[in-house]
Structure formats: C-alpha cells, structure tokens
Image (cartoon, rainbow, N blue to C red; front, side, top):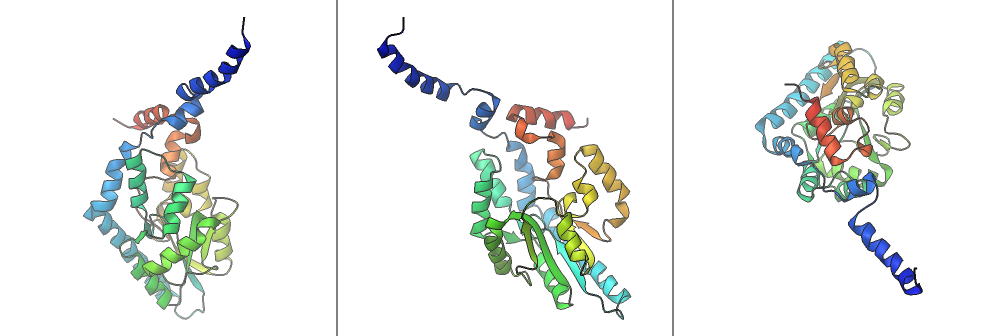
Length: 271
C-alpha cells in the first residue's frame, strides 16, 4: 500500500531516474557528445594546407579570366553585369567555428553559429577580396547571397566590410528570410542584371536543379548534366567540412543518433 510519505517521494524519484535514464532516442541523442572527430582531417586541411590556398587562388583567377572574357565580348553593349557569390567557405573562412565544434564535441546549433557570425571574426579566403574589388572596379555589381539569417545580417555586413569586400549594403547582401532555397533571390538579380558568374562551395549555390537534388545519386547526375557550366559560369570552392553533400549521405540527420550517422558514413564508403 502506498502511504502519503511514499507518494511525496515518488515525484522526486521520477525526476532523478529520468535524469539518469533519459526516455526515448531523441533525449538520449541530445545527451550524447557529438561523434564529429571524423571532421578533424577536413578542418586541418582547410586551415593548414597549401593546396587549399592554391585552389582558392585558382578559383578567383579563373573567375577574373571569365569575367574579362565577357567584358571583351560585349564591350559595345550597355549591359548591367553582376557576379553572385555565396559567403561561407566561398569568400569567408569559418573553420574556427568548426574547430570549436570539434573541441567541445558538439554539433552545429543556431545559437552558437549566430554567436560566431556576430563576432565578425571570419577571415577572407585567399584571392576573394582582390577579385571582387576588381569586378566592382569594372562596373560589375557584386551580390552576396547567403543562408545566414536576418538576425545575423548586421554582423555579416560588418565582417565583410572589415575584410575589405566591396559594395556591401542592403541591396547586395541577401540573407535568408522564409526559405533556404536561393533560386528566388538569384532570379530577382537576373531580372535586372546579366549574371556573368556564380561562385559557391555548395551545388545549391548555383541553380534550382541542384537544390531539388537530395540524394547522392541525383546530385552526381545533376552535376554531370551541367558539366559545361562548371568553370564557365559556375565556379566551385572546396569545402570538405560540411554541406549538402553530407546531408545527402544521411537523409534526415535530425532523426539519426550519432551511431546511426557513423554507420551511414561507413556504409557509403566505396572499397
């Protein structure tokens, strides 16, 4: 028989037991340290390799060549030109944020990311400032399309200006509002300008066909189908740290435990 004293103790026991043995996979997953040590090689390569710097210089050198080609080919036409660039891992390096996730064994979270963005401490990728300043000097409008949020816009603008990027204002800095899909923002620019180049680290930065491709197979197929645009109109910057390429491996990562994500990574390896 349960006495009044026992009934008073039961809620306390329930709280204690729940804190020790969380109920359900989501609660258990939330308490697990992130299994993200596999990212260490990608972050080290991004921060320390000469190859990463070389690829960045190469991308912006190619961008200048293609822009000059368009300027020469249409020198007699009064055309308003634009270049569209993504921000993260395309012109700004956020590998220090990734390092923080590794050292604290945590996953990406909106709060920690917003805190990092609003510090405005990301550094420019090699060659990025020089190319965009050159484009601006030739009368080409530079647009920054990013999936950073409105709450992060002021910090983003401050960071870009401090790094030396040109023409950063409310018209040219287009953050995420209602959706992460960038196609509507690209089309709004294309309605007023001849978009000569798009630069990004993620296929989703370039065209709707990539944003609609959610699996590894469909992303590879879309890339092959648009192969002639890469190096001509689309220029890709390397980012092995994160991106939709990894989401394509997981499916819906939010429903997976750390062990399940690790299993998905191992299963995707080709031997």
